[in-house]
View 1: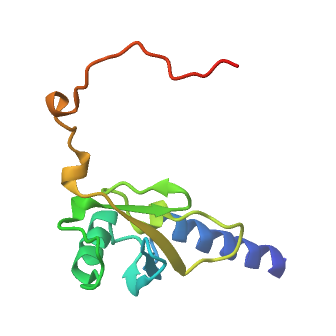
View 2 (view 1 turned 30 degrees about the vertical axis):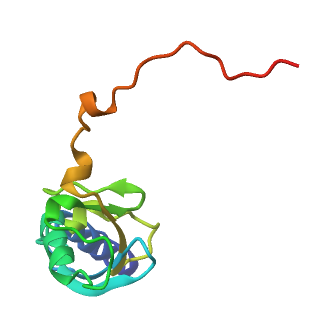
Length: 138
């Protein structure tokens, strides 16, 4: 009987965690394009949004890097193979790894400057079309 009650309490605790009732602290480390890291940064998984993490990445970005984001919009965070959405919390983005609790998360950082997102000028890149074939027939 005690085992059943213990299992019931354990299940209730797990449900409470999934609902976000428990203030869970996690460590987030950001892996940059050259293999270096920013962090780890401790945060509350339920209360911290992806947008807040992006702001932190921009603020903590190493000054010696050749590529650097100017704003949080220039940063994409990837975790578990998925690009994370700004309005999601860290708890919502975590990829479950079986029953193993994960308090350390590594997110990959991709910098895509705003100027690279805009479409290039069509007039500048317009080349005359040719109908030549560069194939060699033997």
